[in-house]
Image 1 (cartoon, rainbow, N blue to C red):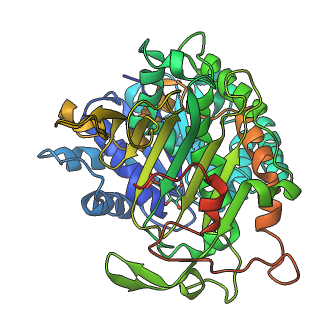
Image 2: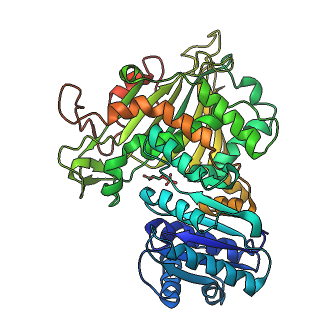
Image 3: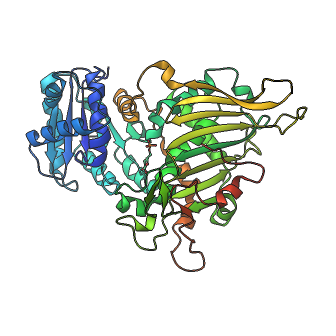
Length: 492
Ligand code: BG6
C-alpha cells in the first residue's frame, strides 16, 4: 500500500471528480489499497462546509455507475476521511488552508506529509494552481513526497503545451508531474504491451516484412453530452487524436523497451513518435480526412447534427471526425502505413487496434487471398482475436475466414476503471502509464498541421464543407479513399 498520504482534489465539485475520481478513490480505499492513514481534501471555488462536502461526495458515490458494490458501513467510514476547502485559486489563502490540512493529517496519523494534488479543473486553472502550490511551499518534498496530477487537455497546441510545461517546471521537477491520459489506464491497453513483449510468437511478425498496415479505431456513438463549451474549442484532434489515439499508436509501434519501467518505456514511445513523418498543413489533404456529423439515425432514432446541438455555434466548423495516415520512417515500419480514425456519432462505441498482415505470396486456392488480422479489442467485449483462412468442410478446397478469439471475461474479473489504476500508480510513484513531457510535446508537433487546417476560418476558400457525414454512419466517404483502394476499414 502507499505510504500515509493526503489526496487533494482541485475542482472536486466538477463532473469528472463526481463521475470518475471519487468512485475510483472509494473503490481503492474499500479494497484496502490506500492504507489506513489516508484522507481526501476536496478543493473548490464554491463555498461549502466539510459536512456539506461529505454529503455531496456520498451522493456522488451513490449515483455514479462506476462505484463498486458498497460494503455495509463503508460509506460512513469513508465520510470521515473527507475535508473541504474553498477559495480563489489566484490568491494565497486557499493554498495556506490546504497546507494546514496536510499538517492536520500528519498529526492525526503520523508519518510524513505526503500529498498528491489532482487538478481536475478547467485547463485555464492548471497554471494558477500549480503556481499557488509553489508559492506556499507545497511542492517542496522535504517533509514528504509531493506530486501533481494534471488532467487533459494538456495545452491546446504545441506553443501552449510548451508554456504550460515551462510553468509547471518552474515549480515541479518532471519526476513529480503526472499527466493523465486515461486510455493508458485501460486494462486492454496495458495488455497490448503484455502480449507484444510477453510472448515470442508475435514480435517476429511485427514489422514491415509481414505487416501490411495497422488500423486504430476509436469510434464513439455519443454526441456532445452537453459539453459544447469545451468541445467547440477543442474538436476531435485535440479531444481524441493528440492524446488517446497517439498513445495507442505509440504502444503498437514502439520498439521493445530494455526494461518494464517508466523511463525505458517512455524513451521508446518518444523514439517512435520522432520517427513519424511530419504532417505540415499542405500534406493534410493527402493524408487526413476531417469531418463533422449532420443529422442522422442512430440505433433507430433520429439524432440532431453537430450544428444543431445545444451550445454549438450555427455554421460551426469544429471537426468531430478525423482519419489520418501516419508513416513511420524507421527500419521496422518503412512502407507500413498506420491508419488512425476516431469520431463522434458513429454507429457504435468500439475501440480497436488491428494489425493487418500481408497476403500470402502465392494463391493456390480458388477465391481471393485474405489478409490475416490480429485485433486488440480495447472496449467493449475486451479481448484479442486472430483472423485467418481455413478450409471449409466439404469436397472442395474452399477457404473461409475464421476467427480465434480470446475474451477478457475468461478471467472472470470485472475490469477496474482506468482512473483507479492511474490514481494508485500516482500514489505509489509509478509514472509508467503517464505521458512524459517530451512525449506530449512530440504528439502536439505531429498534429500541428492538422490543427491549422481544422482551425481555419469557417469562411473563405479553405472553409470545410460540413456536415459531411450523417450521424450513425462510419464517417465521410473520403475516409474510404484515404485507406483504399486495395485496403478497407474493418467493419466493426
Ligand atoms: C475523453 C474525451 O478524453 O475520452 C471524450 O474528452 C471521449 O470526448 C472520451 O468521449 C472517451 O473515453 P472512453 O474511455 O469512453 O473511450
